[in-house]
Image (cartoon, rainbow, N blue to C red):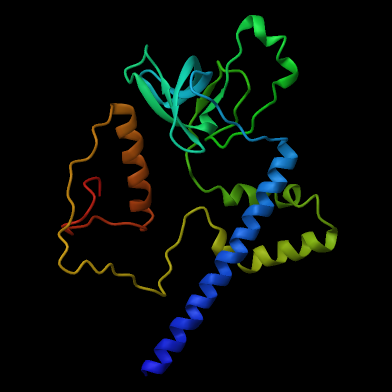
Length: 239
């Protein structure tokens, strides 16, 4: 029995290693393709540089807008910076480079226009290069039914045979592509805590808009049967 278990563990570790290797290659290929299509380039800033930052709006925490200019105080990693925000409640902010773009003074804008390039970012919704546009959060609901209803539009880049094969595959396994996530009943998972005591802390204070949004996000998986209230000593206070 022990030999069988050891053999299974070895095969499992080998499978995980192969999966990680293929995932790394796929990620590198996707990044290369994305950078080529969107003409992206690596960005970095120095201490003292002026930047625009994508920050939440006052009293509207679920919306963001480019504001500034703010001054770079220090660089904490390859992709993270501390900026000075003297007119906001937080006088300093730790932000990711994806939320920053270079600020040009009016007199320097024309001179540097040939160096200005549109920056692709990963944010909740489409982002314009205009720093006064408001960015709204997109509710993370599945819309598989909408896509499947107009599948031909999504497969127009494929040949007729390829599109037919994909359509047939999606039809055969249609239950996997519902708008409501499903549970896998094949496995049970336990977390072994041994003698460790559960960590309990009060939830962060939230304003009314954020609290309503969070309650709705918790309520949805409850109604879908994905989560349920817990009496565990380590349960989250929102659940």
